[in-house]
View 1 (cartoon, rainbow, N blue to C red):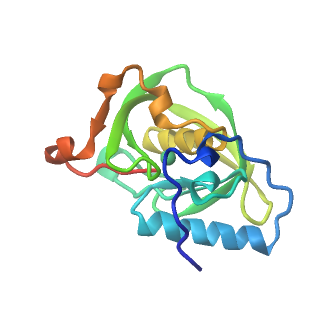
View 2 (view 1 turned 90 degrees about the vertical axis):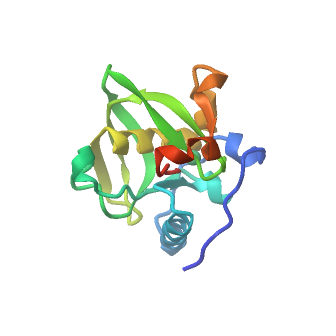
Amino acid sequence: MAVREIVLIGDPILRQKAEPVKHFGPELRTLVRDMIETMREARGVGLAGPQVGVRQRVIVVEVPEDEEEGITGPWVGRPFALVNPEIVEVSPEMEEGIEGCLSIPGYVGEVKRHVRVVVQGRNEWGKPRRIEAEGFLARVLQHEIDHLNGILFVDRLESREKLYRVEDLEAEGAVESA
Ligand SMILES: [Zn+2]
């Protein structure tokens, strides 16, 4: 396993559409393991292929369980990969929440996302995976799938006033980045 370098905003790869994965071989599994290690080392909750310079439709997610905040369920508290993920259902309800990005260090924004989504894709072995997510997990999935389409959270801010410097929010506690 290896920690890979995280690509920062300004690099054109973050603005390109990633390609679907066609081969579910050992290289893909190495990529997934490296992405999980990279995400953990950076203390992120999600990471997408383009963020490690790989233009492939692969994301990894690890949302810590927080029962008090209602963040629980089978896809929480452990890392997992989704290959070729597609959002197949969204709730009409949306909510604003604070979001950061490992490719945009030092900043967070208040971003409106669907409260619930259903995402389909495959795991790193090619087995179909379907995830019904809500709240924070749904937010992270939407953020990561955006990366595969060249979209960053700053593109989804309703105004410049919804972008904050992390150091200005110090008093408000931990901010997680994807
Ligand atoms: Zn991100």
